[in-house]
Image (cartoon, rainbow, N blue to C red; front, side):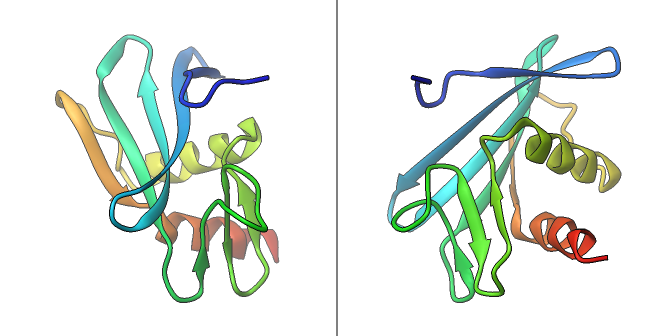
Length: 120
């Protein structure tokens, strides 16, 4: 069984990425996906998905890492293919940080783009 927040590897071209998925309640219910390059572990992007009207994050009846909209689109952040799609979209939007530290970004706009692409 996989342990939560243990970094997993994703190789894209010649770059190796580490990614983790987490969920917490403080004070809002949120799920997050963190992406870091292996050569620069102190710089990363954290896509944050907060529970909100029309937006659903992990928890009953969904599994760990699931994010969804009331429109019925569900993405599982534990699937490498889904993570790759978020990484590609974050790259296209120039969201990947180069400075030391973690950059928090709202992940829902990327989700909207990815789920919209699924229907075309």
